[in-house]
Length: 203
Image 1 (cartoon, rainbow, N blue to C red):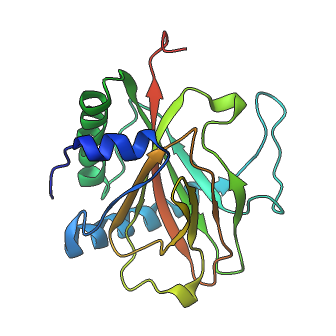
Image 2 (image 1 turned 45 degrees about the vertical axis):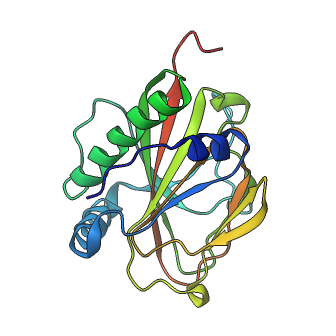
């Protein structure tokens, strides 16, 4: 698995609201093991909720994926060890490269069904989640194609960009500055998202 260092160009791109892309992150075998581990978690996934505090609800017109939130300190699920190791490495690179201290990361597993499951445009650091600083999404599936749907549409400073959510690819961007959406899926779609959190005194 390759390391990840942030160059000055990477830092500038993130600060300006653009995204970074890392392909072939875990390698063919590593991605396959990760996907198997995700599918083993399927019974634990629940319909995603929107809202904040005690006012959350399921609204499939806004988002219709199923999710599992893995909190810091929980055991790493089988098959996801190498991905979590890279997430830790990325967190150190983000802190060192940007000079912004981070308080670790939390991880969400999500699965979009092949029945048009989607998530409308949003940011990952809206009012109730403003402590999220960076998002890192990983897509393990092999041979994912445009016709399978479920593209990640990013609204970056450089303009809209659609990303095929597969093929051992990671995408990194500012959680509070890059709106994005998941287009309707026509094949089951798996993703693992790490949110890097601001320290308590950052705000």
